[in-house]
Image (tube, rainbow, N blue to C red; front, side, top):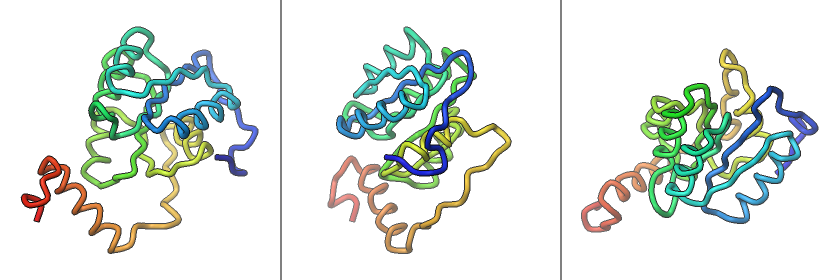
Length: 167
């Protein structure tokens, strides 16, 4: 979870509170440690329910939220954070990226959308990028097979994981 571009970089500002919402415990632990070394005051949650409660009690300045969590959708967490704090900088992480979800995430107030596995440098860069800067295009754009697989997965989820209906 390290690279060269942001190695040694530290977050700046008065409020460096960061809420990381991720149900993959090993990834959550690694990312939390990496963000702490970059100066964030990190709080973690492993579910939508836990994250929304923490966000309402102490709205963070920054958030990293997994799209799919065991008890719901990470976009609900972003919406809850933005209700309490409209200047919060939230990014979405997902292993099931698609354009429609990215658009929804941005409409709800996310500042960026990263595909998993995202490393700590990518997360840090997305959180601290100034609003005028644009993210660099991905080095490895999705292949046609990957786009097809993503579409099938999206339809599968829309059909409540009913294989017969998906076909």
